[in-house]
Length: 124
Image 1 (cartoon, rainbow, N blue to C red):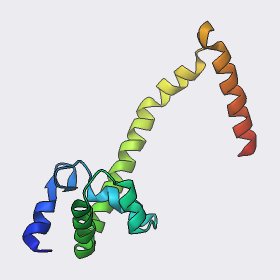
Image 2: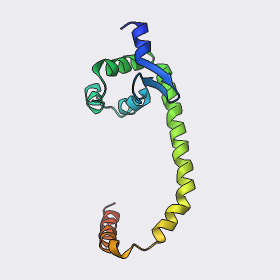
Image 3: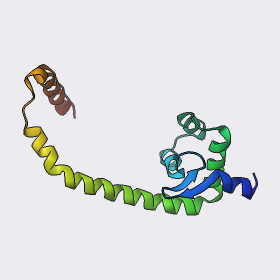
Image 4: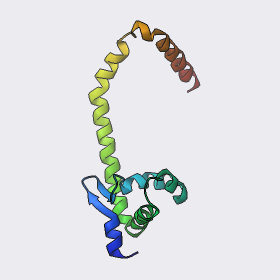
């Protein structure tokens, strides 16, 4: 694959390194690579892109491993910070929601949910 073709297959957007024509970032693929998934299995998860797009992304990651890995670590840190921020922001709201009793028409479903939650708590 030539450098020109490689550059057109992978572009930099506000989301980071992205497969051209999609919203899929290379960091999405990196999640699977870090989890130890084989490339063939990863390919199955991204069935909605072409083989050329997928192969270009994997090739780009292999050829620029240090750069992509560095950016991926920054993405993970930012994602974790965002998750923590929103968990803190919503902590009070979630606590208030759990205090509400269910509507009469949802009472049976609520009771089933409580039984299910209790069973899960004893299994953990």
